[in-house]
Amino acid sequence: MGNFFSSMFDRLWGVNREMRILILGLDGAGKTTILYRLQIGEVVTTKPTIGFNVETLVYKNLKLNVWDLGGQTSIRPYWRCYYSNTAAVIFVVDSTDRDRMPTAAHELHLMLREDELQDAALLVFANKQDQPAALSASEVSRELNLVELKDRSWSIVASSATNGDGISEGLDWLIDVVREEQM
Ligand SMILES: Nc1nc2c(ncn2[C@@H]2O[C@H](COP(=O)(O)OP(=O)(O)OP(=O)(O)O)[C@@H](O)[C@H]2O)c(=O)[nH]1
Ligand SMILES: [Mg+2]
Image 1 (cartoon, protein in one colour):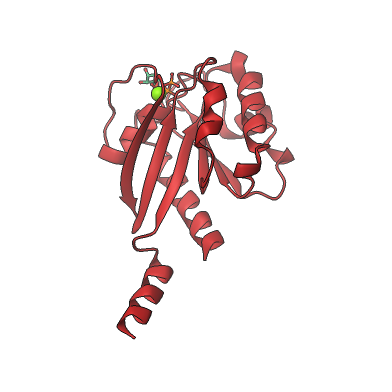
Image 2 (spheres, rainbow, N blue to C red; image 1 turned 135 degrees about the horizontal axis):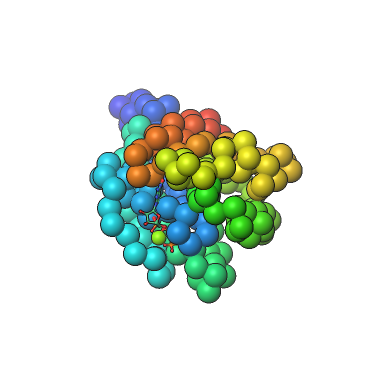
């Protein structure tokens, strides 16, 4: 009986639940900066990620296994090795990188076509909003053609990994959606 109630409680509150989250996006978008802001709440000095970083963090009672993959052109073909059992994807865009918006859009839609990601929720961070040249979240949304997305929970949030704006707002949305979908 005790077990019954404790497992009910765990289900309701998500205690002990593990969730796999991928952070993807082009090189230099701010993925690693976001990962460590989430984990330690600070800005770390990064270098381009060759391979991946993985960190476990507990957020709102959920254990999140967060994988930050390198975004360089030569590394992107390996993203697919990490897709299985992914509850959510955080796709990070450098909102100042106007020239590469079509490349970001292409990589995003290619990734979302993969079978293993059909049930994954999508959070897009329109990152680097602290920069004057940044496109707004709605402009990034248009560049990425997000309205085309069907049968998927998605949201775009304006963020700055360096000053922290938008990061917890985005993660709150993501956790609520994934928790609702998994109940
Ligand atoms: N101004 C500003 N700079 C940022 C922001 N987020 C990240 N950066 C900077 O952008 C550069 C690249 O950030 P990373 O987090 O290493 O980028 P990444 O997406 O992990 O890149 P790869 O590992 O090569 O795929 C670093 O110099 C960061 O300090 C932001 O919100 N605003
Ligand atoms: Mg990185």
